[in-house]
Image (cartoon, rainbow, N blue to C red):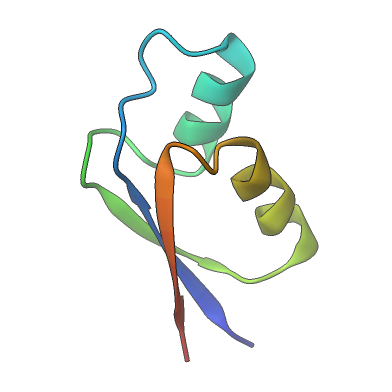
Length: 60
């Protein structure tokens, strides 16, 4: 299964509380922090809601 490398490029401060919770739930703390998550529907849904804050790369 493919993996996604998710990097936080913009701060979650001063964003909607729901967006801040998603960033924290993904394990992203500070700007430029990265996590690797599986490419599935649940992850894609979360990423869609915070797409303006992150950069996503596909890892094979």
